[in-house]
Image 1 (cartoon, rainbow, N blue to C red):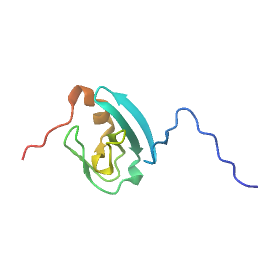
Image 2: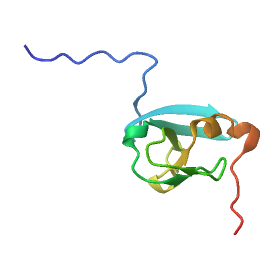
Image 3: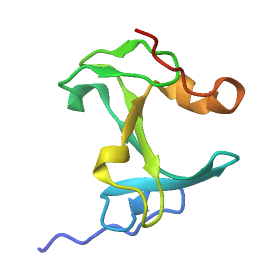
Image 4: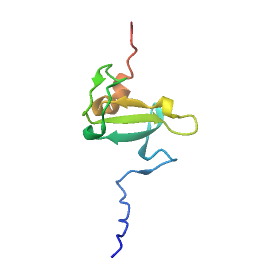
Length: 97
């Protein structure tokens, strides 16, 4: 018997604009596409713009980039989930060398 595709539920993310599985978020800092990344799917170390700490391989986190025509692959940023959720209170850090 052939497999049936299960229907999409309202709370599940859907493919948006050819960017894979991402959800759209609107906040005071603009429109964003956000993708949740599981810990098992991460193999690189990233630096969170919210706290300026490393996101180590195996750590679940979110990837966010501006929605619309002006957002590109180069605009993606990897954030800790808590840093992304509290960015309106904190904002991104600026690295000082």
